[in-house]
Length: 126
Image (cartoon, rainbow, N blue to C red):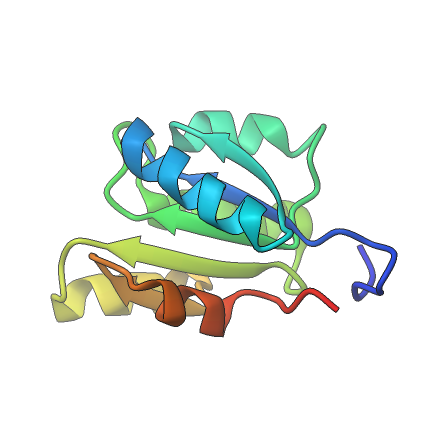
């Protein structure tokens, strides 16, 4: 997808196994004007790529099944470097940071993520 213009929506895929967190983030982003789709697992996120082409992915690293870092690697292979991947983790361990960097994740945020921190890394809506 090309850079967003005023007539295009910015699409955000939220990959989070906690339904309350996923729903809260979706409501927040939708109120800001983003087009949002949620997935409860890495497998579901990858499956959505055929129908939903995100500009940005908010990705929980601690997913059941496929780990978030593996999801990021697969997203990079399928979508490319234009996709902004923001990983969210409950850990501040250096190993998570190293894993995120290797997986091609653009930004790594530690939970709980504040609205202002999140908005700083999301693609802007023009």
